[in-house]
Amino acid sequence: MMANECNNMVWFYSRDKKLLQSFFNKFRACHDDLYASYIYQLFLAHGYKEAELQELDRGDMIVDCDGIISKQDSFYFFQAETETAWTPNVESLQKLLCERYADKIKLIYFADASEDGIYITNDYNGVFVNEQYKLDYAEDGESTVEYFKTYDDLMEYIRYFLSKTVSNLDDFPTMERKIMRNLKADAYCYITHVKYDYELKERSAA
Image (cartoon, rainbow, N blue to C red; front, side, top):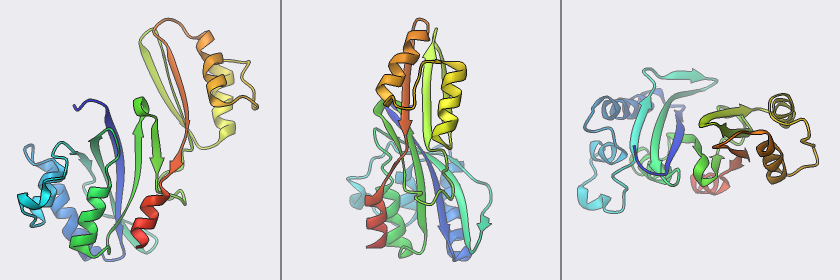
């Protein structure tokens, strides 16, 4: 496992099932191959030459992939998981979709990396990602991560399990400090609200 890894859930979708199936077959083949489960290998499978991939991070991994293509409304999609260093780095996948599929396949992603404060998605409409808040805490070496759809859900959990003194008027750092007072040794607490990657939306529309 890479240091400071960023875990990314990615949904690839298209109205063209045949085109998506072609991409899915290559993606799934890389995932299933122990020695080729990297984004770099996915580019090679699409006919890129090594000289064209000098700036591509060879450590970005394909961690998981659906076994089938599903349908929602008029779109076909499949879900995958990648692991990258430091940042989501979905730009590389977007480059591939643009250059080899003329942007007829698009992606939605959700990146989660607590250590680097990354909790971000481009799922503006909440089609696949509807957890707005993340609570990550630990005590006595035991870590817990909870996700919440609403602020009220987050507050209810905190007040019931962690601290009755937390107020709706508190900002997140204040909440974290109040929670930390009740946690035992080897403790930490991070509360995060999802951010939206509007830059990726602009690049997709270009």
